[in-house]
Length: 194
Image (cartoon, rainbow, N blue to C red; front, side):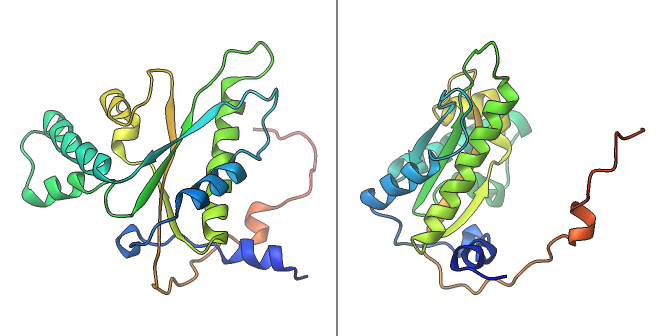
């Protein structure tokens, strides 16, 4: 079976962040990507996600703050580690944070809202890829750290679902092994007995 859409979806690959370069998307392309990212399952129409653009000098400012935070947690860092933290968000022209912002609801649990945010992140990746951009979805250690989340502009109840690095790349990315269908697909055969 073949269709242009199935072929496109099967062609998506994560590009190493080190291979992502300028140019990044225009403002009009970013808006189109976000529109696509909001076309996801969203039980109750809660929009339990938001998007943050990390670009320009803000990426460098966050990098310097991450160096300080990492040293607060780990002690003095080697110059290599300092550079690693300094460039966390400045290696690609654009990083879009996909943020889960759960909304209290009597019927829609927080985990379901978090899944909706994950769907938004995947749709963002597909939209960027459709526009010809290279992408890489990461979260990094600071996404789980309360001070790190504050540096990223999150409120205490918000969580990072994805930091999607977006830009251009000429790198040829080999296909990685994917799971065999027999390992991930089955017919229902009754309740499990564990």
